[in-house]
Image 1: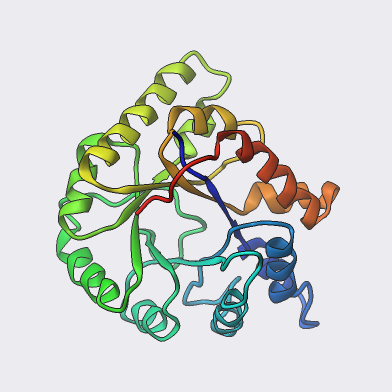
Image 2 (image 1 turned 180 degrees about the horizontal axis):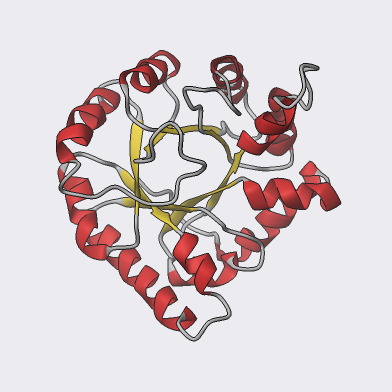
Length: 256
């Protein structure tokens, strides 16, 4: 039996649009409420030090929102580079999940995974610190099966596979081989005892094949494509459209 695949809506693009003017809208909190009422199982944000999109105040407001019941308690996922400022924020908020990414503060977006075991010295203490607070830790990783065991060895609960290469391969002669490589990553994650998430450049068009290749996929985090689709479908409609894509693949027990 395959397991439910949760949809976590990344709201950074909503925050980015709001920050273009000093008028306070669109509201990140209202967007989160709309997404959850439409059935999304979680909310994701990636607060950066320059606050160019999600701000600390947003994180605090969202933490209070997800504590409510939307037909089941939604999950709060906070992404970021594990410097002291982020770790302090995570300890204060205690989200359900922290997704640690290797990009530096000035990076435009997360476009590569951790280099393990080289980064173990940085990640090991951060992972231990977060898990001591009851926070599930996911590491953003390139689709390299050999590195996933190292993620488990430093204490990670899950990995989030960077799916940019998968999205870029579609329509090319390499597409089938790339998808098979992701399937190998799913097998390697399971063998290592890791839960499996995925994110980056995922769309309604490319999700189905990835979900079929990764039957133990627990969560997808989607922002850019979903918010773009909302321009035509509305935010509620976009969330429901992504849930419709995921629904045929979801049945069974939750991942760790």
